[in-house]
Length: 384
Ligand code: NAD
Ligand code: MG
Image (cartoon, rainbow, N blue to C red; front, side, top):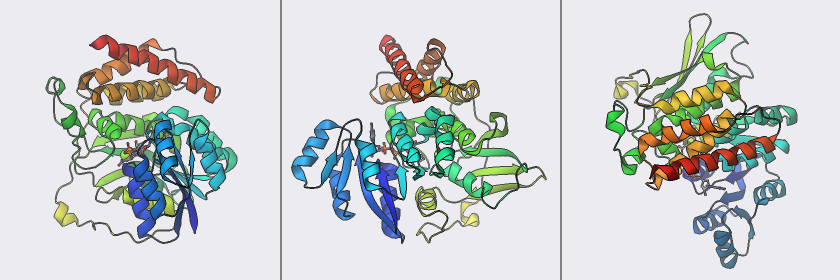
């Protein structure tokens, strides 16, 4: 049995990860965590016979304690205690936002393998995270579909010889606003932005997909995971979301990873690695799919991708500042305190105002994250 701690279990990835645990063999959940939806969390704990959970919202933790005789951890060290106490074989980090970084750091420091959905950990933590994994020998298994595809294509253990991979390509669905001009994006609503054409996901990543910030975060994620130069990572819009990623080799061959969009596939790959398991998913019938189409990103309508690439290339705390400003701006958009186009304006303004520094330790990142959040929040407040 592979013993798994699942963090962010009430979210879109968390629920699908539990589905994979129930529908495939050899996996056992030993710890669960969520932010505030304690009733759902306790129901998951009951179904999976888990006796220890962490809840980050203090009121929700109190409510859970009153309703349950298992152990409820809360407070700044809760996830660290949850992970070290359960001593799992694998942690699946499906927390949203930079709030997931601490759990990534604890997991890798303990030398525990990590199935990582929380891309923000890699964007914010960068080399500190990958160096930590290298130092302790913990494996980083991406859950993000494009990176799971790349992991499979690159197959670092036995696949392509070093030096033969020339370029990586990440596909983007284009989100709900693909094809719209900047002018047409001025008045789009939260409901329209949340209505993703091919994936059903949590609120934050749905907005990131609509602005294309998600793809920007993913380029940084790919750079960190695979050590590929930014100049060798391409993004192409592919509305059908059938091709997830492609690698191009020096001999003119290109290898792609295909499948219907279903996050259970990359989740199962990460949880079961290196085994491949049977999964009840829709088989790919290319004649039924018909056409696969590809187009370039409209950088004028979707400036967030360019902002992310520039921050990635700048390095240091720039991706951390970008991510923090994005989290603040997306929350403001969901709260109807800023417009869709103002998300990019807040991020660009914050990147211009907060000093970018070299990263010496996680302390640098925590301070930089806080400074960027303050700056972005005051920029949002000044909009109204
Ligand atoms: P979600 O909003 O549906 O769920 C987030 C989970 O994190 C919830 O369980 C919530 O309780 C928990 N959480 C939120 N804030 C927290 C905090 N401060 N401390 C601790 N826990 C907290 O999000 P999601 O769509 O499942 O995405 C999770 C992560 O996976 C994100 O980083 C996202 O970018 C990535 N991802 C998601 C998808 C997808 O299809 N949903 C695909 C690829 C990558
Ligand atoms: Mg993705």
